[in-house]
Image (tube, rainbow, N blue to C red; front, side, top):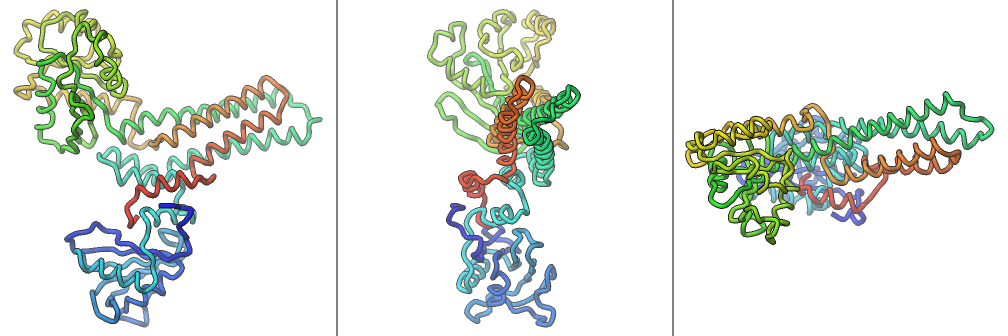
Amino acid sequence: MDSKLVSSDDTICAICTPEGVGSLAVIRISGPRALDITKEIFKPKNAKTSFKPNMTNLGNIYYKEKLIDQGIGIYFKSPNSLTGQDVVELQTHGGYAVPKMVLKALLVAGARLAEPGEFSFRSFLNGKIDLLEAEGIADLISSQSEAAANYSTKNISGEISKKFNNLRDLGINLLAELEARVDFPEDEISEIDKNKILEDYNQIKDECSSIFESYDKGRLVMKGLRVLILGEPNVGKSTLLNAILNEERSIVTNIPGTTRDIVEAEIDFRGHRLSFSDTAGQRISKDIVETTGIQKAKDKINYSDVVLIVTDKSDSLSDLEKVFSFVPREKIYFVLNKSDLISERKLLIDELKLKKMRFIEISAKESTNIENLLISLLAFFVNRNSVDSDESVLTTERQVNLIKDGIKAIERSRLLFANSDHIELVTIELRLFLEAISKITGEIHNEDIYDLLFSKFCIGK
């Protein structure tokens, strides 16, 4: 959608329900002529009470005076509607033909087919939602787990927006205090006043940092826990992945890897999304640092949250650590495959326990202990960064990059205030902070961002 070209003065319409066989379809109309255009095709059974706001109306729907369906019409008068404009929603019978015939009748009567996301865009323009809430809607539509949907709903409700509005208010109050010093330079700042202002700076910075740190939580929930399966050839990596996928749980996707030696798959396990990458066919040996494949492995490791190191041998822990020295210790989870070899691995198990390394014994072939492995990963998922489903978090790179800009600006402003008498420079940086916050919520317009975000929505949204 090109927000520079789309006019909010047009009356738009679209089918809001999925295309196909179904008992019900909803067609939405929004704009200054929404009610007039609807009246061209929809004739209520009870003319005396027709189209009172927020009331249902049973009636017949016509196309060029030919009856095409019987349905329900509901009128929402501006500004008390989804988009802030006059809105009518027609509920018709579902299927393929009827909704399209109703849509065609509306187009002939003078409506325009909505662009993808145009209803939500109008909601944003008319102050019904801010940019954060719009991104929450996009996240909800694309969410692939219950946890992701819960986080998205929190952001749609405006919880994250409240945090940024509070930050903006703190910044504005601080700016007003400092600009008063510019207007009345003869009033020197006392030591008490200076300490109070520095406390205000620290409060703003602490709250910004807390919001910034929430991005890891949001990314983890929205994108899922990223698990890399690593190990030498023939230790059972692919068998392990197959065992995970063959359990009775929902397989979200099964994606061919971008290279011939990495296979990826995602599952929904107990309402959380887990993404697995199997480095099938990639030789991992003690001379791996000399091979051309090391960079590929490192890239995948850096991208992953957990690295499952699968082994079926009785190697010592020191040997394994040498082989996999390029894997950060905090990401490692040893998977001891072929649990019938337990007697041969006693030394390794004792070493793992002594060094408090995470490990689990499984049999990928027999699917033994696979459920416990997933439960352990889920525990890591939930505990990492203290993920709380009641907390609102950042979920997009746009948001986190802008809050980074805001943190840098507020810190520059604080340092200038603490170490110089140039209040004008202090306020310039403080204004840059406020600008970053306003861009996050959409108070400062950026049409390229709008086009990118709202074009991801479906036409009826």
